[in-house]
Image (cartoon, rainbow, N blue to C red; front, side, top):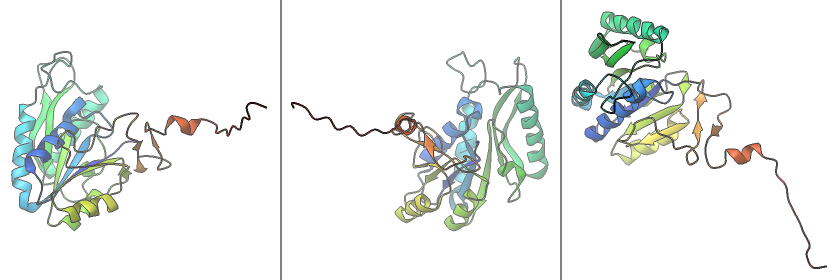
Length: 235
């Protein structure tokens, strides 16, 4: 399954909503959920302001004991994931820029403050392979067409989000994005938040095997046998 889920941010986007949705999606549960936002694909015209908002919000998140209600991010699940994140951060520093985040020392366990990375070469491994951690890459593009091409340029297709005030861009996104679960202008979570029993949760490409979804309204009946009943009464 898995996903390398993009949030596309157009020039017309409400940047406050975009930053809020990206932060919640990328760093909730310490990024350890399949539908977390992994990539921000943003048009150059608004990239600087959006990145500033994301970095500022990421730096305000609290890392610590997950049993403490004041905590926003707990530890990553094991040493293997932590080592992957350490390696990815070193690679990002060498081949791009780490704007914020990294390992937090002084706590027992593998804790990371939210990592935001930019300026990686296009098609870089860190923008293509899922780390399953609080690690977000930012990819700048010139046009909305380029943004759509980049959003679809991965092997996965689980979830995706768009922030735009242009109906033509929204229509294009809904028609052309290669993902099973999509959100538009959702500040509560850019790429995540399907409601079991209400919304179907489905993946395309390597995020699934059939393109069919589960957990939606018709999920359980799909496992049942159909029967037609005709009963004549009163004779």
